[in-house]
Length: 258
Image (spheres, rainbow, N blue to C red):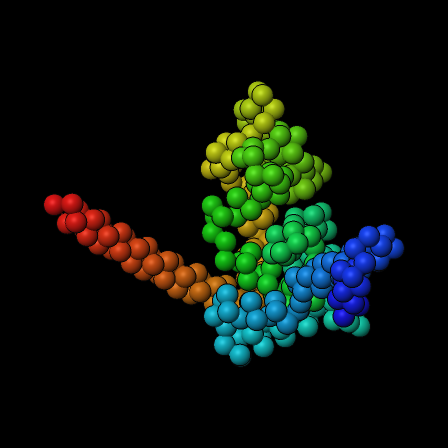
């Protein structure tokens, strides 16, 4: 209403510089309010729980079970946990915290680590635990390929391995790197990244270990196995449907020109 009043007065006195500045200031404050509201609405716990329920097609009992598991983690008075709290809950070394932090960041619309309440935690778990092997590797690669150029630097690759395998704990990494042929130009494509996973599967094993522990803690491995099998079945049905539709459209297109 304040902005409307200023605009009405400015319409009557268009050369009034003071009124013009007042309109601009009111527009700026209104724009700031809208931006704050949008930012606050990106990761609302209630919305995240709805997303998780719909994404995994959870029953009320299943959602309640996942929320109960979250409540078993030590949290603050506001029902929130830290990344380190979650890492310790999984019984992972704290050296894995940067990777787990990235899991939560990727599940957030702002691409930053959200407040780890029940909603944001379960949303991250839902997305991460549904990743297949290829999708997992893409997720890990994207951690460093922020701009999506399709390559990372060798030093970033080594930094990643340093997180997954602290040198004083795993000499296998050192042996693997001695046998590995790192790109001479200093950059690594995703294809080369996948090749390393095939040749040295233990290099990225810690990421898959975290995923398995998440699945085991939240709903159990058998539950996720059934969920993934159902997802794969639906995916194939959608692909077959799309293929039939494409073939039908092609036939109709040919018939029109015969």
